Length: 372
Image (cartoon, rainbow, N blue to C red):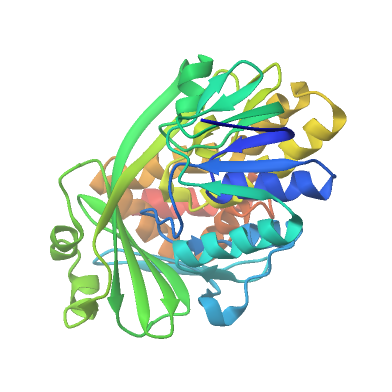
């Protein structure tokens, strides 16, 4: 074990959340080290689509996504075997980009900012005055646990008391095929949702989310005839990767000089596509709290930032995932009133509030739903 000079901040976890917090803290003049047991490139099963608010949050970190590294999309389209509805984003375009590409961009930004990055550290645990692993010991004034859904830092710190926890299962694979739509598409089936993101001019990412841990991409496509027809001849260009989609709310996300960030601090279901944006905004809020010398306001800001994504996830899961008949009626109603879908998308990306739907949109949508 190698003892290292004390740092202002040690971030455990070198994913997007940890790197974003390190970049922000360096902007405020802190000496920051990021530790991760893995070695880049680090991949993860996800839909790989960044909403416009995620793109804006990245720009605030000083990270610009050039269009040539991914594929820009202008909105969202929902469809099943009978109905289709789409809407453009009110606040710019989104971009779909491979997770490994995004990771490397953030690593580059962190290196330019002067963050010390240490990879392949082994499992990192808390110790007196900092953190340690089999390979190193590091003293730090502040410790940030950004080590994901199965956070060791969260567990060791005793933050594993949850107010809410629900699990679904996701699998992702890439296919060699040109995009057929300027939208990120969500296909709704009886057993799952498939999220289709164009990550390049000749490549699509298909991510399948369901309550069945055994449902793989090929099986899901068999139940989504329109999507299966489109990709039938497409060649897979990546191995299938799986992961959990967890809705989790923690009772608290800090104690003393230790804070949790990103999925380690709670998470939202992947149905929202807002997980990345949320972690970037949390990183900015946490850096500001550390700059002010305390973490009390980080707790309240963490709750505030999570409120809208959790509400939208609950709404979509309740109306679109739980009951096939209800989902069909909702899609049919939205197809008849696309401006309601447009308003919902604006709420989803933080450009409008739920109050904007009342009363005209709610009345019109309700009338279409009841006429069903």
